[in-house]
Length: 446
Ligand code: 2IT
Image (cartoon, rainbow, N blue to C red; front, side, top):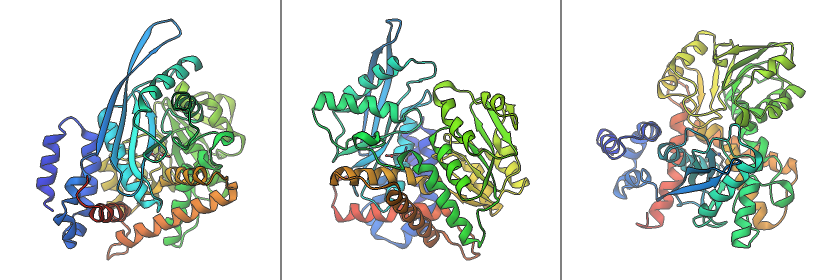
């Protein structure tokens, strides 16, 4: 494969999609040698084919707000790759959502889902709907209008959406209800469902738990341990919440966490009821974390700053793409950070990743480290198919085994001669192989 030509073609074809180009470039740069050593991939033009989503659905979402005014939003579903299973991936409701965001996330999801060991293809969807300040009735009417259109394109065996930023149990409930109303069937078409109606135990915690299990794998590789490690988080959503719970359980100390308006520093550690309060704050709906410092005297609030300026051993971005930039990376490195684990999708800029790798910091990309969320969605699909529910222990053990397998697969394909593990390269090659081999086996279909 000719990396320069592929990138030039991609830039010409997608001139206004910087996020998609960033995600694609990272993959191409890390798989180029592997692809060139294995000529079957070029013979079947696998790289060119994997770069093009199988389908992009764009639609209008019209709904009526509490004042009786008509609102118009955009809806998307990118069905990126179905080679190894039905399209699978979350729905993001956030004001920043564009076709570019959806394309980069769906592309990443294909590799991530391949890594989970479960049979799931890659997809992503969402809307530029901003739920800040919206009433419950408005959110419900939006979700119903969104699903009225989306239901034409999804199904339990074809495309199974889930949550992401701005889409939690409440929104999944509203959308599931609307799907059921229109189609008249109670099937596993969404994951992240409530426990009473087909959901899985541990799904809310899974992305955070999985990221910490991945971190444990990295530590073990370095003959290091998690006990006593100082950790900075970002995000205040269910990913950061799950990570904080597991970090406390395993004896690490979360000292800082940032949100949209600034960060909280708490040298006593963010533990126990403070973690529960993270959920009560409902930052996705309200956009503020400052009240945390009012409630807990040990916590200080730093307006407009990010938690990456705190001296920590481990940083886990859990918010949104490109939330940790080169400057943040250099500050973390100067403060002696040992591990940066992306729980958000593409949480670090390309320049930040380069700086961290150059400094030999252990760096785990989101498509490997945050795969626990979608992996547990896959386990929810299995339970729906069997019409049985597993215990929390059973799901958690399966999640842990999957994260260990992802970690080991990254090491297998990413360990360099000097012993430094390039987890980005490892994840991209390991994720690529399964999808590419399935595409070859299935003939020239997509
Ligand atoms: O980014 C992600 O992997 C998710 N938002 C979870 C997707 C899923 O289908 O559970």
